[in-house]
Length: 265
Image (cartoon, rainbow, N blue to C red):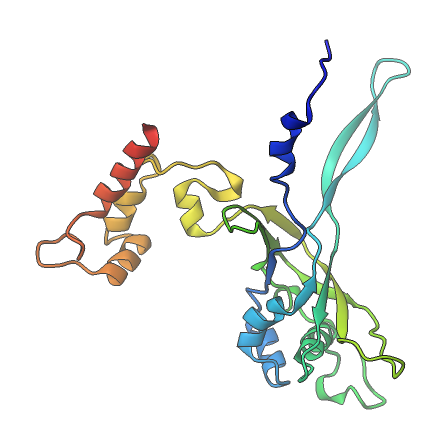
C-alpha cells in the first residue's frame, strides 16, 4: 500500500545531489610519433598532458548503448530481443583558446597527423592523403574525472583508442569581443568506468568496486618481495635500514594487516 511521504523524507537525499561542475580532463598515453609531430609545432608535452585539460571549458560524460537483434523463436508470434554488441557514442569537448593558440594547434595538427598525406608537401598540387597507422595516433590513457565539491567522491572514465574526428568550425567576429572557444568531437574504441591503475587493482577498488584493505590480494607480500617489480619499486622508494625493516621502523605488512583488522571491526 502506498503511504504519504513527507518532505523531510526527501530533503537529506536532495541536498546530496552531484553538480555538473567540478571535473577534470587529462590527455595521456599519446604515442611518441604524435608527440613529436605536435612538439615541433609548438605544442609542448606539458600543454598536452596538463594545460589542455585545464582549458577544457565544457565536457560530456560518455554514453553507450547495446546493439540488439530480434530472434524469432519456436513460439508463434513471439520475438525475443537479444543484445549482440556494445556501441560507444562519441564525446564532445569545448576548449578555451589561449593567446598562443596552442589549443587550436593541438587539435588541428593532431587531425593533420592522422591524415598526414605526403608530409611537408601539403601546400603543393600533388598532395594526397595517406592515413597513419592507428597505434600512432590513438591515445590510451585519456581520462575524464568527475568529482564533488568536497573531493570525497569521484567517478573516473578512461578512454582507450581515443582520437579527434570532427573539429567544429570556430566563428570569429568584429561585432563583439568574447573569449575564443573551439569544439572538437572524439571517437574511441571503448571506455571503462572506474579507476584501473595498479594501486586500485591491488587494493580491490578498481572498476568502482567497494574494496577493502584485506590481505587476500597478497599486496603486502608483493610490496616487500624484492623479486617482484612492485616490491623493487617500493624498496627503492622507501629503502631498508640496517635491521631490514623500512625506515619508519615497522614492516609494510604490519601496516596493511592492521588496517585490515580495523576495517573488519
